[in-house]
Length: 274
Image 1 (cartoon, rainbow, N blue to C red):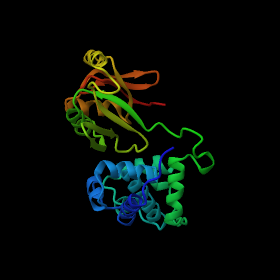
Image 2: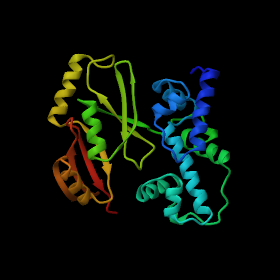
Image 3: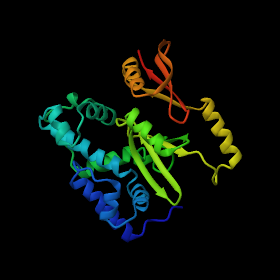
Image 4: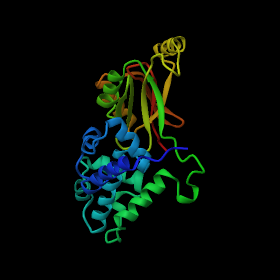
């Protein structure tokens, strides 16, 4: 059984949550938030997720989407609502809104009543984190992280952010262990752990060497990354130096190209055509 957070720690986390609630268009770093409430970065991150079920980033995003819905409901344009809620990219905002809310911003009814923030917050968090109150504690609700072994975390971070355009979700150190996660900017429900391949409690030197050999052969895959224009994305990424070993091809399931990351992991980049 997980022990409850100490009251003093919970009080500090509540102050941080209220900070995100009261100024959602600001973008303080996790380190800055932790410093404001006098907690270490790693302690703050772990405690925030334990207390509220989501990361600070996801919490702030939920508040911003609520602001956007309110703006749309009173008749603001999609562009006005985007920037009023603190988003800087109209395309990313529209994609995120559609994915999380279930309707495109342009389809959000003007003049619709806006729920109060506390009720909206509870509904968002219950739906997102527990699958509904009736099922709380009785089922697995989502797959949140997948592990990708990398040979150099700094280099992998640069590859996924600078070349693929992902964003860093968490970058925390706990002793000599580094927890580094990235994800596409429009996808909030899952992350990729860029896990350093080295001997440790879960892997001895022989297993590490075997995995490294497989990486060097390029036979370990990360899965599928989806794009809405495979050929254009292929051209953009190739110009940035991404190593492709398969050009975009018409397949029964869509258009697909294959590439490797800086550690040797291969990815399928696909576009659905039906």
